[in-house]
Length: 612
Image 1 (cartoon, rainbow, N blue to C red):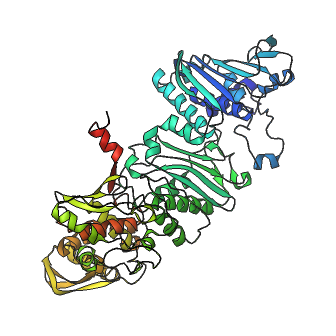
Image 2 (tube, rainbow, N blue to C red; image 1 turned 120 degrees about the horizontal axis):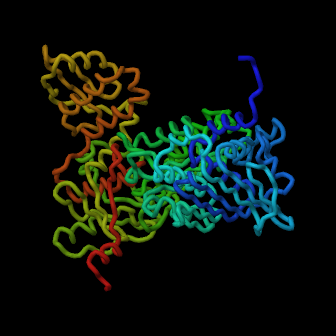
């Protein structure tokens, strides 16, 4: 065939193949135009999943009569006029082909009344004729019979329920980004969402529910021209799919591999397996720093300094998630001080009521000496904790509580105010698994193995970065192994030594362990080493200090943590509670399970029907 120019109608249908994938694609483009028009109220009506009709009415600035025909032309837009405008795009829509492409595969009409106009005008896509219309203000875009003239495309559409679900997703994405706009969605005459204008928190609550907000951390971080705000869920709210992941760049919902990787890395220490985090995050930066014109649907972006964005998102989320509810503001302060780029400040939602101190909790509370019990329990001291109380503060004593507990009497009132520890004081141990503690608000339940596992894991992270404390064994631990374990021990001898293990052959099929990291001195040696060697067999040593490092340390922490059915004394239980308050990410173990939960007095009263 000879080279020839394609007719406009065919060009529009080709563009429709890129832009109008399904009814949800139409809804996205029209909703973005409504937001760009400065609307404060938007109403969406769908019929048959959007295939029969998509009607979007807004109260925006409207389109003047003389510009209505241009709105249906290819590459006609009021939002950019030069290359400089394209590099600083601040609107949702800007490409100018959406309305033309939609008109090519549907029966579309636009009714609009511009600000100051005496009345409204209506234009049909075919034929393109103007006619007076009745409309108070704004615009109404009506798209009917999608793909009526391209039956092959219509066959690829799914069921009505599936298409509506996609439209609902688009509506929710736009609604989350614009809580200042009142929005309503109805399907086949039935209202699905009625969202009044309000705060960002109220909009998130309306669309994701109270459960999400209750299990989410507030994220607020800023560094230079980058700003990240929103909510990120704790692992307890993790999901089996990605349906609750919303990330926005300058108000535009995007799916970006770079950002997704940064978020996944931030959750790596607290969320494992096939679970996915839930979040609603808003990244703001100079429009010049991001290219939004890399995909026809504008759902992908390209950052000019991708590494800076990745590190900023990663550190901002890490700080927000590291702050433990067990330690209150203390964890937040310590985490921020340890970060090299501590210019970003993160906010934390506390799962318990009570004071939010402005300095590490341990500097405000001096415990009764329990060093021997603690050494027996954790086999390690905390040199960073103060050995004596501040001279200007009273000293609460654990001994004041222990006689009452021993005799079965009621315990005296706990210290209040800044001196009150968030996790309170231990009362008892339940079936050798859970610690029961009392704080100012009520009852605290702690999974002692999961909590100790997190404490050990956070400390073990320093093993590959420095010189670990080593505990030599008085009598070497000798146990039989197979040929693979023997080879693995020889191959990784240098790495094991760096972590504090001295392992050598004791026979043709025996290994002797002569030293272990001090943190794991009480762990079952043979079981720990076998698990460690099994992990090392699965990947090269070079990966241990990079991608697989945390998995290796998590295995060590799991085997080194105190086991279920071990009886703990009251001082040991209190020592564990204080360690939890000083440890980052203490709300979850390495596998994403919660380490503690709280029952307030109001919860207990409700449980026992008190006051009714």
